[in-house]
Length: 210
Ligand SMILES: [Zn+2]
Ligand SMILES: [Zn+2]
Image 1 (cartoon, protein in one colour):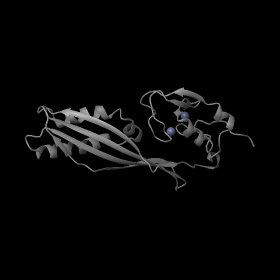
Image 2 (spheres, helix red, strand yellow):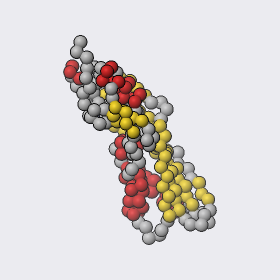
Image 3 (cartoon, helix red, strand yellow):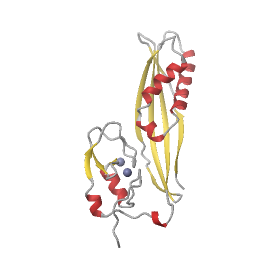
Image 4 (tube, protein in one colour):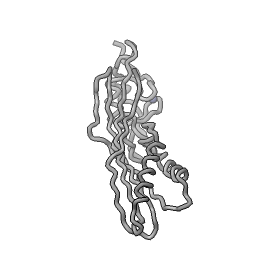
C-alpha cells in the first residue's frame, strides 16, 4: 500500500474589472495546500491550516495570440511554482480551465473595460499513504546521537520541505541528511524519532541494537 493522490478543486472565481491604458488579463492563482497522512489506512496527521501559495500572471492581450500561445506563456510561468511540481498536478488542465474562464469573461466584458482580474483559488488536499510492507520496515526510530549530529545547511531557492510541504525561505537554516535530502530541522527530527528512513529515498539512519 503506497501512493499519493491529489484532489483538485477550482472554486470561488469572481471578476474585478477596471479601466486601464492597455488591455490585460491578470490571473491570480491562490493555492491552499492541506496534507492528510495515513498510516495503515488510519489518518495520522491532518494539516488543518493549509499553507497558501500565490502566483500572479499578467498577460497583455494581443489579438494575434492564439490559445496555444497563451497556454505556453502561462505554463512557463507556472512551471517553477513549487506546489505544482511537487504535487504533480495536471498543470495544463488547470491552465485550460483558467483560459476558458478568461475567454468567456472577455467575450461578455463591456468595451470600456480593459483590465480583467481573475482570482483562481485552488484547494489541494494531498493524501499520502505511509507504506507498511513487512515486518522489517516497521517504524523504528533513529538513534538520538545520529539525529543530533545531522548537518545544518542553508536553503537554496526553489526547494521545499517534503514533510510539511512548505517552501523554504531563501537562506533559512535547514537540516541535511547524509543522503543530502534537506528538511526543516523540526520536521526531520520529529520524523526520525518515529522512523529511521529518509522520507524521500528511504536512506537508513542508524538504529540502536537492543
Ligand atoms: Zn518542514
Ligand atoms: Zn534521502
